[in-house]
Length: 335
Image (cartoon, rainbow, N blue to C red; front, side, top):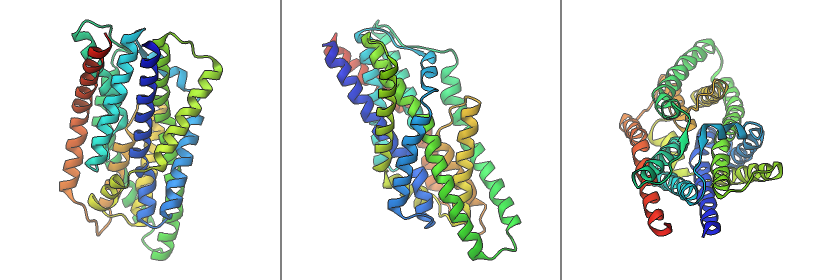
């Protein structure tokens, strides 16, 4: 039974990582495709390759993630990992269905919280998390990330417009497309650096709950698996979400697309430096919107923007509910 539970937890975790890559990849490839900086095939391929590379670059950081959590041993821990992965993956499927650029990190952490709360309600061991994790990992990034991305992108876009006011339009567009290609690649790499650690946490948590030790060879195997799954998910990028970002929400020109991608990549890098897990989806969405709003002929659908904001607000609640639901359901079958 425990071996079957471990396998189920690993499969569910792999499913979540694939969906994570699929949902977040549009933030890297959609802007350069919209502004014709890259062809769709080139943009998706670049996004997938650099996302996987980012995961591999994070290999030295991954063991440090484990100090923030302590998974209960035995079946309780395996069921908790299974339920958390299923809940986060299910919420990701909802986001894809609704064409919403949603935070996979917030969905995963909320699903873990929901599963752990459900475990406590029925008297099972719960997951231990570092004090303040909910505040630092969900509430603060939700309150700070989008607004910071919007404001910074708006300011940078206005500054760039002022500096380039005498340049020929063709020169500006050509340079912007080149810059956007580079910045989109850096964003994809930053996404891999950040979300690869979440994938590693799920896989490692399942093995720890089963009583297995993680050897150096096992560490590399899990890292390579996370890179393959996250990069593979990126190669399946959700064009439904991509269309929301660059058509339904706003329209991008090469200059605004370049500034939006650069701002998002810079904020993700800064967040990792100060250990603030900003949502790549939220930061990217807000940065693209802020850059587009700074252009003279912006076309923003505020109805779509409000819908996205509402989806962000209900993500912690919805994912936590799903995590708790899957824990209670799996517990009824296992215990």
